[in-house]
Image 1 (cartoon, rainbow, N blue to C red):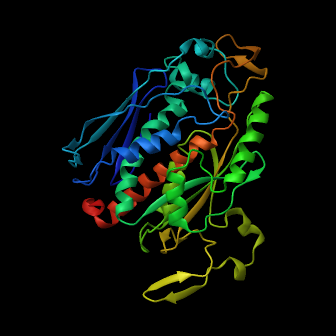
Image 2 (cartoon, rainbow, N blue to C red):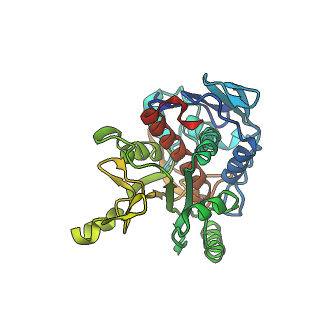
Image 3 (tube, one colour):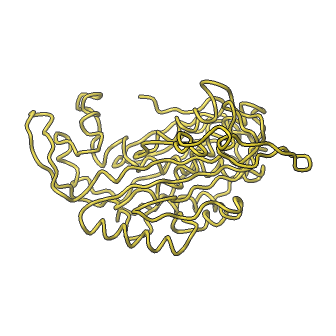
Length: 362
């Protein structure tokens, strides 16, 4: 099982949704980073369910850093974060050791792990594991901000309601970090919640699009071909449960544009070289050009819905039906935004450390 991501900075996940704990090990961190516990707490709080459209499973996420930190600073040795699971109700999941939930990994896990997998709450495939990613990413994100690099993700579209675009990137990102709902326009937020609740009340779910912006990355980082910025970010984003697509800059709209429309023209602004548009999403040839790195991720509707659905018992090889009980999200996208944000911070930090050395984040 491949649970480690990164080159110069490596992140390894462990644990299952209903096991004793989940956690993460970070290796390759710069020594001397001050741990901003308040920022980590705030990011974890954003990942928890905060509205009526989210699951009623609410964990405290009272994490513990058990290695790699001394007197409030990273030591540079492997840093391990452990997060206990407390609000666990495994009785809702006993059926799924043999009956496949449509849209979930129950059947594929059976094929790969031959019945030895922990199926409770989705086991190692559960979105619960993203808590560890958020804790690790928040630690790194706070260090990046001291270097003038800011990462933010908002709900661009959900339930037929659209948020406004990023305007003042840094200001918008800072506002997202203190928001209870990852959206820039408060009026759109209320409409989105109302519409998602209506969908939930009809025993269904809905997906959406989240937009991420990374600002302050210097020009000249990233690699051509296999370790391009797009490649690394895409690899990471597809690790988030429910992400089914990604586009950078103008993305799929490029297919409808002419070269004269698509090309980002350069100009000089004092000591800086900028572009008049950002259709390439801040990346040329896999390498940052100094403009904001901007990309969208498509998030599918939550797979667990209360409606009766057709499926199979994969042990007895019989057709059957299923109605999924338990505590589930009408849409996962409000909670996925902070995961995309913090995971993006991990990727960018890995690329920067690889370019400038281990001590870059000091």
